[in-house]
Length: 155
Image (tube, rainbow, N blue to C red; front, side):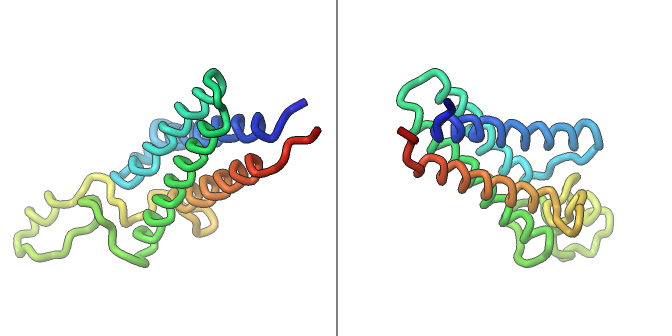
């Protein structure tokens, strides 16, 4: 019989692994190279995978799964911020957004452009960018893991 903690642990491993897999397929398979903020979203998923793997071999398991869920949630919140930058709801914090045109030198303006910009969605589906999908799946998944961990185990 599968317990809620086991389900949460499996979800805490599968979700970030699948999201990272999708990110790498989009990068290497379809040429959608990540911007700086895309990388910011990946880092918590790397941490979540390591914590979830540790929860398969180290006791106590629940705290490790909770930390993995927290890392997944952080990635989702970064995704919300990044999507807001892409949709021009607010300005980004990084150097990968379009700088103001303060220079009168067109060549300097072109050379100052980041290779992959954070303020332009590389791909969308139904109006949702990859950062938006990461936010939806990560926040939803983290909340599902927390809900599973809160449930009482069946006797």
